[in-house]
Structures are given as C-alpha cells and as structure tokens.
Length: 639
Image (cartoon, rainbow, N blue to C red; front, side):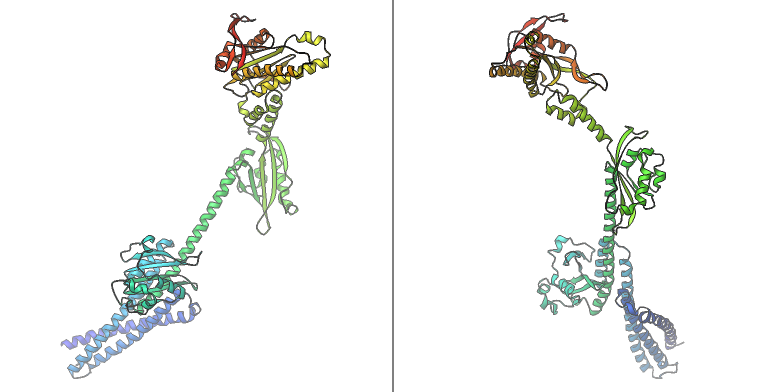
C-alpha cells in the first residue's frame, strides 16, 4: 500500500471518530439547551446557571467546529489520489496541509476551552469543599493566581458594619500570605480596587504603562505595574468586595478571555465567601446561644434560691441544684417528671402539688404578676436542720406574645436567715445591758466568736463596792437609796463601757466587770486598769460638782488570771453571761481589802501594765482561801 493510501485510511478513521464525537456532543448540547432555555430560564441571576450558559455556548461552538472539521476531512479524502478525488497529487498535498493546519488550530482551541471549563468546575468544587472563611479566602486567592498566572493577588471585602472596603487577604504565586502590616505598604493600585467596588464593573490593563487605566490611576505607572486585572464579587445583587491580580514583570499578561473567566470565577467565589460568612455568623450565633445557656445554667446552679419550672401540662423543665438541696431531693432525674409524681414523697405541709395545680389551672387570673406568695414551716426528714422555713413565689410563664406556656416556682429558704435573726436577737437581749453597743454589733456580725457554752481563758476582772453602804442606807428613804445607787452605778458603767468591758453582775452596792470576753482583747489588763482609774476620777468629779449630796467612799480591785466564762442559769430561763473561777474570787478579795477610794491591783495584772501605770510599793496581802499572800500594789495613776 502506498504512503498516500495509508494516510487516507488514517484520515478516514479520524473522520469517523470525529463524526461519533460530534454526534455525542450535539446530543449533549441539545439536552443542555433544553435545560438552560427551559428549566432554568427564570434563574439567569444565579451564577451557577451562568456557568451552564457559558458551557452551552462553548458546546455550540464546538458542535459547529466539529461539523466543519468533519466536512473538511471529507473534502481532503475526496481530493486524495486513489480515493476518487483530484488526480493532481501536488494540489491534493497542498490542500491537505492547509486543512490539517486548520484542524490543529481548532483542536487546540477546543482543548483550551475544555481545560478552562474544567478548571472552573474544579475551582467550584474546591471552593465548596469548606465553609471556614479563612480557608475559603486562601483558596480563592491561590486558585485565581494559578488560573491567570498572576504574580500576586489581593482581596478586599466590604465590611457589613461600616460598608467600607477593608483589606482581607493577600497572597503571592508562592502561596505566601502577605501580612496586613505589609499590605498597608504594598505597591498595588488600591484606587483600581476602590473603583471596581464602587462601579461594580471589572477593569483590565494589558500593558498598564500605556493603558487608559494609567491615566485614571497614576499609581499604576508610578508602581511599575505592567498588567492588571480586577473584578467585583457580587452575590444576591450586592457587591461584597473585589479580587485584584497584577504583574510587575510581564506586560499583556491578561486578555479579555482571562477577564471573562475571572468574572465567572468571582461569581463562584462570591457565593463561597458569602456562604462562609453566613456560616461564621451562624457559628457565632450558635456559640452565643451556647454561652447564654451556659450563663443561665451557671446562674441556676449558683443562686441560693430554688427554681422549678414546668410546661403547661405540668412536666418539669427546670430544676436547679438549690431546689434539690432545699427539698432534700436529687435533682438529677427531675427533668421530665410531672410535678404530681416529683413531689409525692414530700411532706404534705409543703403544699407544692396544690400550689402548682392552682398556678396551671388558674393562670388566667394572674396575667400581670406573681401569685400571692406563701410561707411554710415544716420538717423535711434528712434535711439539716430538719425544721425549715420557706417562702414560695409562683407565677405563670408566658412567651413573648403573652401565651401561657407553664409555671415557675421560686423557693426562698429562710431557715438560715431566721436562725441568724433569732441568734442576733438572743445576743442583743443577752449583752446589750452589759457591754458597749459596739461590742454587741461585733457579736451580731460574728456570732461564731461567741462561745456561750463556756470556755476557759485569761481575763481581767474588776470589782467595785461602795463602802459602809448598809450603815449609809439606814438613815435614807428607800427611794433615795435606790437613786443614789443608780447614779453611782451609771458613772462606773460608763467608765467600763469606754474601755469595752463587759458588766456581768450588780451585787447590791457592788458591781463586777470582765475584759477579754466575750470578744478577745489583747490589752485586756490595761483596759481593766484604765477603767478602774476612770471610775475613781469620775466619782470624785461628781462629788465635787454635787457637794450638797452625801459623799460615799468605794473600793476597787483588779486581778488577771484564768477563769471560765459563758452562760450561767437555768436552761430556757433566766441566764447571765459571767465568769467563775479563782481569778474572780481574788478580784473580789482585793476590792474588799482596798482602802476607801483606792484601787488595788494584783501582781499578775501589774506584770502586763507596768510600763503604763504609776503604783505604790508592792506589799504582801493575805486573803481568805489563799495559802500564800498576794503581792499587790495601789494604783496611783495611768500614763
């Protein structure tokens, strides 16, 4: 077989294959045409439909081109020797070469268009592979730079808050992210980007130094940009930003075809960016809801009041841990239970079941607030303390439209408050007659500091007694005697209170005070001595100011030592906070042995106050029930 014959056979095989491909392409074109111009004719604003229209136009061109190529091949075959064509071999060869060149060009064009469509389809798949905004932005810039072979690319998005374009991301062809700090100094034509966003029209500069764009934006020339292309990002008829690519190296890098493809790409990118933004907003909203729920859960867990809510059928929807503690019920399995079942085992005195029943059945009677609050005191087995005092506040739950959706109960546990109030009342009743009001307030604020059951500790004890009271009162009327006692006791009490001492007893014409109890006083010995000295000065001053009254003499003793302090008296009857022990007895003996209008202090007291007082010489004093004499001193002054 000759060379021409073999070529003829090859051409026939190619012709047959082209015919087969042409038929398949024609059939696909017809189906696509039916969808685009029929099914999707009303959705031309959808970028995805726009891609289908582009594909249809390409297939139409390819269908026509393949038909023309097939016809050209048939002519070549007819003109070849031995195939019924021209006899002139040279003329056939020339025609063959011409048609083959045309065929090569057409096939190259078709391949390029196919590759471009494949790239667009691949880009669409890539952009739709994630909803993370940062990742979408990187993919957008990397694919567009790769697609048009640009040197670098920038993306600016319009801020939803301010409506102004803002730098979003910048990448180069090495897939390096340009930091925002460098973007501010980047040598790009920012004016071009702003113009595209404002006009929503793409811009193309083949040789930017000569292009008309350079007359609009001088920065293009000054920055040495050779090729530039910028397209808007439009979704749902809103421009959300722009994609900018350029080259400072190659002129005429971009063509009209590149711009068309960039616009098709931007349509897909705008959808992907918008979806990613919506997804980010959704995630933010979901996270906010989670945070709000967690915040509310934390509030419900932390508040001291019990909170129980039900739906309008009576099934529990909220039951916080405080409610479980107050009612001594495990809160783990309460959600979803009906209130009748949940509270069946509780004491009937609580009245929770009728309380909820009334709230749910008569909600229409309480549209504007809380039901009348109720209080109850009862015993809950296992609860410590078992005897509790509660306040209930129950109200109808309504949605934003005022529709009844359930009931809410708030339980205010007043048990501890009531116990504290009783304790404060007890402290006040017990001490306000004996100690300074400041001490009473401190005891109320810190009742744990008070050990009413008794404790042994070091205290300083002061005893004072009016001398010759029995003989003195014989010549006076009873009322006058009582008035005189009260006057002198008042003078002495004020001196004791100034030093925050505790009056523990009035024994006829005598009184007793202690220091360092009920509250600790590190300088209790000095306080007791100062109180004694102030008592002496106050009595003397009173007598000087009232010379017409009968003068009385007194004796004072002060001692420091261990004693037991606490409540003394019949349980639930009259009780008195006082001190007992040897230290008290010694103070009483010192008062008895003190000369008129003088103060005796024991050596145990002097050891603690020596730097602050003046005293007489120490001397031994034998007292009742003591095997050894005491070493005592008369107080002469306080420094």
